[in-house]
Amino acid sequence: MGRNILILGGARSGKSSFAERLAGTMSGKFSYIATAQAFDEEMIDRIARHQAGRADYWSTLECPIDLPSILDSLAASDNIILVDCLTLWLSNLMLGDHDIAAARSALVATMQRSSATILLVSNEVGQGIVPDNPLARRFRDEAGWLNQAVAQAADDVWFVTAGLSQRLK
Image 1 (cartoon, rainbow, N blue to C red):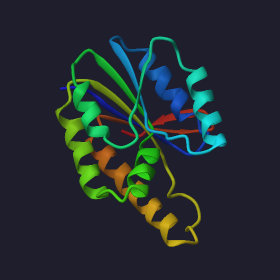
Image 2: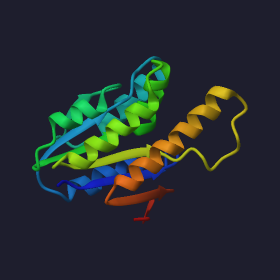
Image 3: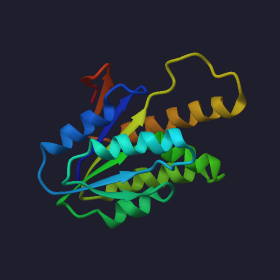
Protein backbone atom coordinates (compact mmCIF):
# COMPACT_ATOMS: atom_id res chain seq x y z
CA MET A 1 0.00 0.00 0.00
CA GLY A 2 1.00 3.60 -0.45
CA ARG A 3 1.85 6.23 2.10
CA ASN A 4 -0.53 9.05 3.05
CA ILE A 5 0.84 12.27 4.53
CA LEU A 6 -1.30 15.16 5.79
CA ILE A 7 0.26 18.61 6.09
CA LEU A 8 -1.79 21.09 8.15
CA GLY A 9 -1.25 24.76 8.86
CA GLY A 10 -2.75 28.21 8.75
CA ALA A 11 -2.83 30.56 5.80
CA ARG A 12 0.68 31.45 4.58
CA SER A 13 2.23 29.11 7.16
CA GLY A 14 4.58 27.45 4.66
CA LYS A 15 2.64 24.19 4.41
CA SER A 16 2.66 24.01 0.58
CA SER A 17 6.40 24.71 0.41
CA PHE A 18 7.02 22.11 3.10
CA ALA A 19 4.92 19.56 1.20
CA GLU A 20 6.84 20.22 -2.02
CA ARG A 21 10.20 19.90 -0.24
CA LEU A 22 9.10 16.68 1.45
CA ALA A 23 7.90 15.22 -1.85
CA GLY A 24 11.20 16.26 -3.46
CA THR A 25 13.05 13.86 -1.16
CA MET A 26 11.13 10.95 -2.75
CA SER A 27 11.56 9.26 -6.09
CA GLY A 28 8.82 8.53 -8.58
CA LYS A 29 6.48 10.30 -10.99
CA PHE A 30 5.31 13.63 -9.55
CA SER A 31 1.71 14.83 -9.93
CA TYR A 32 0.46 18.07 -8.42
CA ILE A 33 -3.32 18.14 -8.02
CA ALA A 34 -4.52 21.73 -7.77
CA THR A 35 -8.03 22.17 -6.36
CA ALA A 36 -8.26 25.96 -6.65
CA GLN A 37 -10.63 27.71 -9.01
CA ALA A 38 -9.78 31.22 -10.19
CA PHE A 39 -12.96 33.24 -9.78
CA ASP A 40 -11.25 36.62 -9.33
CA GLU A 41 -8.00 38.50 -9.98
CA GLU A 42 -6.61 37.86 -6.50
CA MET A 43 -7.03 34.10 -6.92
CA ILE A 44 -5.53 34.23 -10.43
CA ASP A 45 -2.44 35.93 -8.93
CA ARG A 46 -2.29 33.46 -6.04
CA ILE A 47 -2.40 30.47 -8.41
CA ALA A 48 0.25 32.03 -10.67
CA ARG A 49 2.61 32.49 -7.67
CA HIS A 50 2.17 28.84 -6.68
CA GLN A 51 2.83 27.68 -10.25
CA ALA A 52 5.89 29.90 -10.67
CA GLY A 53 7.51 28.51 -7.53
CA ARG A 54 6.87 24.88 -8.42
CA ALA A 55 9.73 22.67 -9.64
CA ASP A 56 9.68 21.57 -13.29
CA TYR A 57 9.29 17.89 -12.48
CA TRP A 58 5.66 18.34 -11.37
CA SER A 59 2.87 17.39 -13.75
CA THR A 60 -0.06 19.62 -12.76
CA LEU A 61 -3.65 18.43 -12.89
CA GLU A 62 -6.58 20.65 -11.99
CA CYS A 63 -9.30 18.95 -9.98
CA PRO A 64 -11.75 21.22 -8.20
CA ILE A 65 -14.43 18.58 -7.44
CA ASP A 66 -13.81 14.88 -8.14
CA LEU A 67 -10.64 14.37 -6.12
CA PRO A 68 -11.19 10.65 -5.31
CA SER A 69 -11.47 9.77 -9.02
CA ILE A 70 -8.26 11.52 -10.01
CA LEU A 71 -6.43 9.93 -7.07
CA ASP A 72 -7.71 6.52 -8.18
CA SER A 73 -6.37 7.17 -11.68
CA LEU A 74 -2.91 7.84 -10.19
CA ALA A 75 -2.88 4.96 -7.69
CA ALA A 76 0.27 3.26 -9.04
CA SER A 77 3.04 2.72 -6.50
CA ASP A 78 5.58 4.84 -8.39
CA ASN A 79 3.43 7.99 -8.17
CA ILE A 80 4.07 10.83 -5.75
CA ILE A 81 0.90 12.95 -5.56
CA LEU A 82 0.58 16.32 -3.86
CA VAL A 83 -2.97 17.61 -3.32
CA ASP A 84 -3.09 21.35 -2.66
CA CYS A 85 -5.42 21.90 -0.96
CA LEU A 86 -8.22 20.07 0.81
CA THR A 87 -9.90 23.20 2.15
CA LEU A 88 -10.24 24.69 -1.34
CA TRP A 89 -11.66 21.34 -2.47
CA LEU A 90 -14.13 21.55 0.44
CA SER A 91 -15.09 25.10 -0.59
CA ASN A 92 -15.77 23.90 -4.13
CA LEU A 93 -17.93 21.06 -2.82
CA MET A 94 -19.89 23.39 -0.56
CA LEU A 95 -20.42 25.95 -3.34
CA GLY A 96 -21.70 23.16 -5.60
CA ASP A 97 -24.01 21.82 -2.86
CA HIS A 98 -22.35 18.39 -2.94
CA ASP A 99 -22.75 15.74 -0.25
CA ILE A 100 -19.75 16.60 1.94
CA ALA A 101 -19.92 13.49 4.14
CA ALA A 102 -20.00 11.22 1.09
CA ALA A 103 -17.10 13.08 -0.55
CA ARG A 104 -15.06 12.88 2.67
CA SER A 105 -15.73 9.13 2.95
CA ALA A 106 -14.82 8.61 -0.71
CA LEU A 107 -11.54 10.49 -0.23
CA VAL A 108 -10.56 8.42 2.81
CA ALA A 109 -11.46 5.17 1.04
CA THR A 110 -9.36 6.21 -1.96
CA MET A 111 -6.40 7.03 0.30
CA GLN A 112 -6.65 3.66 1.99
CA ARG A 113 -6.64 1.63 -1.24
CA SER A 114 -4.04 3.64 -3.17
CA SER A 115 -0.54 2.32 -3.77
CA ALA A 116 0.75 5.85 -4.48
CA THR A 117 2.33 8.22 -1.99
CA ILE A 118 -0.21 10.99 -1.39
CA LEU A 119 0.65 14.26 0.33
CA LEU A 120 -2.46 16.27 1.25
CA VAL A 121 -2.23 19.94 2.23
CA SER A 122 -5.03 21.42 4.31
CA ASN A 123 -5.72 24.55 6.31
CA GLU A 124 -6.29 24.38 10.03
CA VAL A 125 -9.14 26.86 10.43
CA GLY A 126 -10.55 25.94 13.82
CA GLN A 127 -8.05 27.72 16.06
CA GLY A 128 -9.43 31.23 15.69
CA ILE A 129 -12.57 32.99 16.78
CA VAL A 130 -16.01 31.56 16.07
CA PRO A 131 -17.17 32.90 12.68
CA ASP A 132 -20.08 35.33 12.76
CA ASN A 133 -22.24 33.70 10.07
CA PRO A 134 -23.74 30.25 9.49
CA LEU A 135 -21.87 29.51 6.22
CA ALA A 136 -18.48 30.31 7.74
CA ARG A 137 -19.30 28.25 10.85
CA ARG A 138 -20.36 25.33 8.64
CA PHE A 139 -17.13 25.61 6.64
CA ARG A 140 -15.04 25.64 9.83
CA ASP A 141 -16.88 22.57 11.13
CA GLU A 142 -16.67 20.67 7.82
CA ALA A 143 -12.96 21.49 7.52
CA GLY A 144 -12.37 20.19 11.03
CA TRP A 145 -14.21 16.95 10.32
CA LEU A 146 -12.38 16.54 7.00
CA ASN A 147 -8.99 17.09 8.64
CA GLN A 148 -9.83 14.61 11.41
CA ALA A 149 -10.89 11.92 8.94
CA VAL A 150 -7.82 12.40 6.75
CA ALA A 151 -5.49 12.53 9.77
CA GLN A 152 -6.95 9.25 11.05
CA ALA A 153 -6.26 7.59 7.68
CA ALA A 154 -2.83 9.20 7.23
CA ASP A 155 0.44 7.50 8.07
CA ASP A 156 2.08 10.83 8.93
CA VAL A 157 0.63 14.19 9.96
CA TRP A 158 2.65 17.41 10.02
CA PHE A 159 1.72 20.84 11.36
CA VAL A 160 3.44 23.86 9.83
CA THR A 161 3.47 27.32 11.37
CA ALA A 162 5.74 30.27 10.54
CA GLY A 163 7.59 28.00 8.11
CA LEU A 164 8.48 25.52 10.85
CA SER A 165 7.23 21.94 10.67
CA GLN A 166 6.34 19.64 13.53
CA ARG A 167 5.47 15.96 13.13
CA LEU A 168 2.23 15.13 14.95
CA LYS A 169 1.85 11.51 13.83
